Length: 413
Image (cartoon, rainbow, N blue to C red; front, side, top):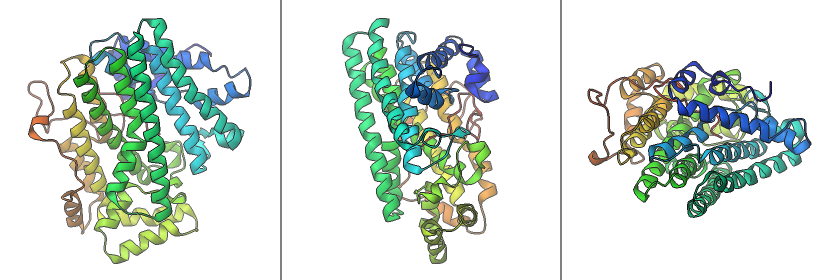
């Protein structure tokens, strides 16, 4: 029914419903984002509106709009004023998904036919372009809510730069796929450009539009970049641990597109010559992608690469949480911390989650985790925690969305 948006419809899982139900103002704002997306793109109108509505409605978890709204609140601003920008953030994110499905030739998105599969590649390109322009139009709408023009210009600059970064990341990924490059550093650079850019753009825009100072904007940008990187690592892991029904997209997409993912890179880095040859054969082969994926999963488990990738993601989570330290204490800052902690899991739970994937070569995992690729937080960057909350205390869950926070969507690409 049009216009009837509930927390359940937005959330998609019990933990997010639980958090949003306690968030007061936030749940109302997120409901408005979902409702206005549905109103803006009327599926009963022409082809363009139908395609955009198909891509946007029903919505995903609206995580980027949530990050934008939370960032505005975290710097002491009025989230209602930045609501148009939050709507735009979802349009921009969805545009990237539409174009991504074209590049990857994926037929499924969020458990439904992708736009390119349903309407054709030519029409999908147009739909993705329209959603990008909708993002910029949404930022301009903030004038009507009272946001000063100079803040809007600053936000437009951030969005444009993040968009260019996303394109650079996509181009770098294409190069890595073509060369079958197994360089972990190159992969991490690609992730920070492609996936983390939209996280960073959402947080920095929210802070800028709400009047945050430079230190707050930088803090939220650093938080978002680390969160986005952890998110992509988790998404990489899901490709080898979840089926299509759960993922909402083919779990053989990475195999078909020879896409570098962290578990595969770590397996190659820590594996013996036989493992490396097998990995190359799987990625360069043209046999059944499901069979190739199953063969690759065995290698990932034997080398301990799944565990290593999980731990690496946890390091980025820690850095993300640490970046929030300069922000004044608030409920929004605590929720932002919860979102980061939802991405991979707390330190204690990370070890438990890693154990099922460890085998006789677990020493290789330790060697990989000790490599120069590790992100690290300096002592001065220690996360701020409430009294009685230790560095190893509970609060994160091992799977996306099991929080004290809102779960990260699994549609990273």
